[in-house]
Length: 382
Image (cartoon, rainbow, N blue to C red; front, side, top):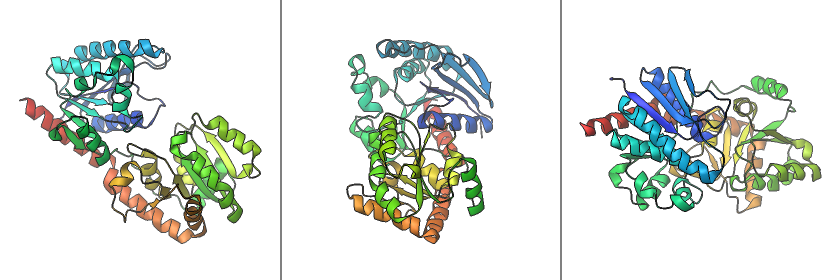
């Protein structure tokens, strides 16, 4: 079909950073691969990053920002508006990621230039996008301005319901799940053994957690259950990530008699080898707007034990994932223990998970959804 000129506006863009930024990067690459002209407008969150960069047919323009929050918010609003004014007339559609002052500035400029704007909501709930802009001094009354966007993209039905409850019109909200980079076939037993050796891990049944080391992610639920699990099974736990709980977890390890069975791998820009080396993914998070790590783990053919958060709530009961109840520590230990014990069940669950994810969240399918929305918004302007 007809190629488009697409501006992706996001306050932060890789290298590093988190799931929302990775989503923007994957989408930009796939849109460009299909022949569309893609321009990323973002802030220069690290001084060593170039102000202008061309990578994989994607042009990145990074604008200056500062650290102090009281100054960063108004400055990002102004720079976003400036960037929007400068480039909006060269674009067919503006695709913004997450609610931020930088995005708001670009949104207002795009409206002046009469360009359609779509905003992808990246987080929900008490710490989510909408709550955050309502909860900081001068930005508390800005939500009506964000609602000038032509369309909001929600990653799950729960996020869509939150947007509708916050005053968005039904036709102004669409559900498009997060996209997932296409994965190679899941590792075989020999491949897992080789990877564990490369990562310095012993050869035993391996449970992995990938995410922020934050109280809300349930890492302490895993550690609370771990002594019981470790007493019954010769298994190891690998925590991949960083965050405010790292120091407390390090202290727990120092004081624990089973410290040698828990590895703190720290932040990994590419956690792929850890997924591939593991047998089970455990993720007892309290709240997720989507749950990228759950989908990534399943795509690697892992048996996944998680709380019913984010996208898991949208799935039918027969989806190939085990739902944890963290309010009962004994059932948590028992369910995870059953997976450790039954290799055949793990393998069956992992194969079904990989097939399920590729059918629902592959890059190509999700990119098609976005292109359909872009064309609809552009046609509505004519």
